[in-house]
Image (cartoon, rainbow, N blue to C red; front, side):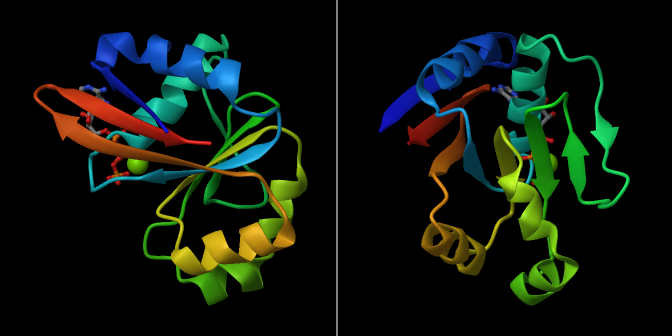
Length: 136
Ligand SMILES: Nc1ncnc2c1ncn2[C@@H]1O[C@H](COP(=O)(O)OP(=O)(O)OP(=O)(O)O)[C@@H](O)[C@H]1O
Ligand SMILES: [Mg+2]
């Protein structure tokens, strides 16, 4: 477990750590309350990779792609059964990092059983910064 404290302007530090430590292919669950900074972290990774802008998937409105190997999913209020019915989980087979916001415990367990490498990043407010707990 690694803990990094970072302001908005220091997110490149968190991105650099992740680039160094995370496997090429993994699913990252982003945990944290509303406005914790889950989306912001994903965007900071994209920015540090030099990706300009995001592309919403032509197939799934819940999926955003940042370049080739970075995907973002916002599953807020989407229950596990609906997620499974949509067939969205097949997307996780694509190479790269899959950043999941509001993923359920059921989804975590399902993906673990399938054999994916799961990473957990918990984000908490800390003064005007955020604390990132990274479990790889
Ligand atoms: N490391 C940080 N330090 C200070 N402020 C931050 C940091 N990361 C994000 N923020 C701020 O927190 C606010 C919420 O960020 P963000 O939208 O990424 O949260 P979220 O966790 O995705 O929320 P939601 O669950 O609603 O989607 C934004 O105003 C953003 O600028
Ligand atoms: Mg968000």
